[in-house]
Image 1 (cartoon, one colour):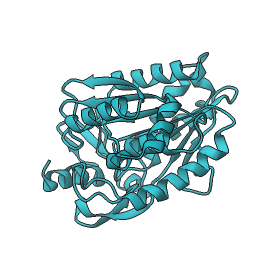
Image 2: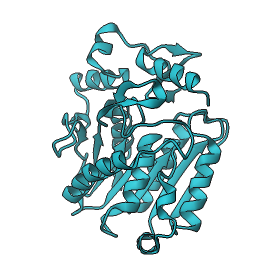
Image 3: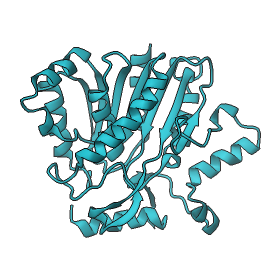
Image 4: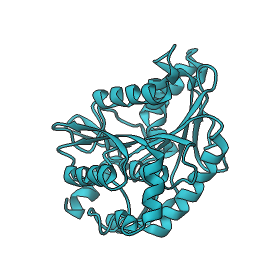
Length: 298
C-alpha cells in the first residue's frame, strides 16, 4: 500500500472522520459509524468507551469498569473478571490506537458469556509508548515499535521489540499463577505472536491470538536450532484471522507468516480467512475469538 494512502487512513483515526459509514480507530474499522465530540477528542476517548461509562452511570455491570493502568506500572486498562478469577487475557492494540480502542468491546465480549470460562477472565490492555513512526512521516503516536515500511523487511525494529517483550514479560510473570492468553490486532497482534513464542516459560502462555497481523523478525529463527526446538516443545495453540482485502497488512503476508509458524516452528495455528474484509474487525471474527478462548481455557 502506498505510504500516502496509509497516512490518510491514519488521519481518519486521528480526526475521527466518517468514511463511507465507517470510523477508523487505530486503523481498525468498525461497521457502526460514530462521531466524536470535540470534548471527547480532547480527552482521547473513543465513543465506545464513553458509551460504556454511560452504562456504568446507569447501573451497568461493575466488572466492566476498568482500572486505568496495566497493573504493572504502565499505561493501559485492566478489567476485573466477572466471576471468580481463573485466567488472564492480555490484549495489544494496533498502531496509533490505545487500550481504550479495544477495552470496552473485549470486556463486553467476555461478560456476555456468563456461565462460561470467559466470565472468569481478567482483561489487561497495555497502551504502547508514544514514539515517532517513520512510515507516517515521523509523526509521534502510540506505537509498539517504529515501522519504516509495509513489508517484512521494513516493518520490525528488533530493539523496540526487545523493550516490549521485557514489559510484557513483567506482566506475564505477575499473572502466570493462572493461565495467560496473549492476543492483539495488527502491530499489537504481531507483538502478541512474538511474545508468545519468546516468553521464557513453556507453560505460562496458554495460547495466542493474532488478528490482521504477522510474524515479526522471522529471519531471527533461521539457523537457531535451540530456539526453534524450544518453541516446538510449547505446542502453542494460536488463532490467526486475516481479511483478503486487507490494505495495510497484506493478506499474503499473513499467509506466509502462518505457513512459517506451522512448518518451521510447529505452532498449532487455527487459521481463518475473512473474505472481502479489510484491515478491520467483524462480529464473526470476534465470535471466533470467543470460541477459541473458550476452547483453550476449558
